[in-house]
Image 1 (cartoon, one colour):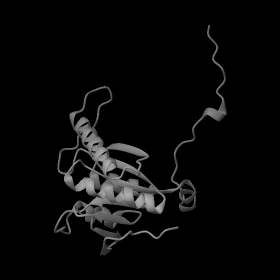
Image 2 (cartoon, helix red, strand yellow):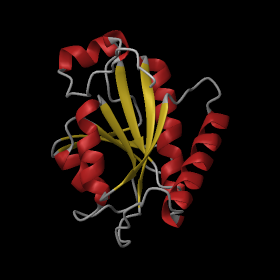
Image 3 (spheres, rainbow, N blue to C red):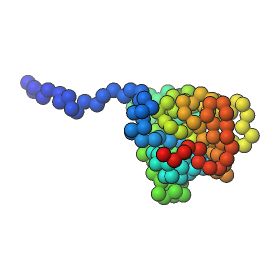
Image 4 (cartoon, rainbow, N blue to C red):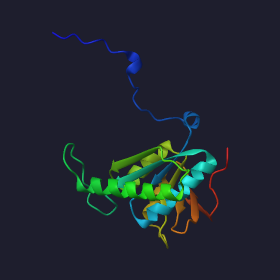
Length: 184
């Protein structure tokens, strides 16, 4: 009979927990960019990469699938899932093109999340200092970005196709092309 070695406690990884603001500051400032593979997702990532360089932040890219308006498809482990595959390819393409535009930028992580778009991004905003989203022309009150900006746990930058930034914090928005966060 094979006897197993006792578990070394130093190799155990603690369960993830919600970080307090003070702890988040020690681990670095994080910028979350939500992309979906559309033209509206490219410019926000370029803007976020430039912003992160200036403000010493890390960039994480998240794609929520299936896209808004599609039927929610839950992934079954061990089975091919076409919507997940499409989301992964779209995310890789946007990240590749953005890094070609900002060669000194870097993305520390990419994530594919299976869920409802608004709820998933709002939940992820709890760990971030800034969320960057694409803005569409003539955004109305029912726009996804508007819902996310109202519910997010951190400021949200809405970046349009021209690179103009609309900064939101809760219900108020500030229009401009400058950086939304002060340099620390």
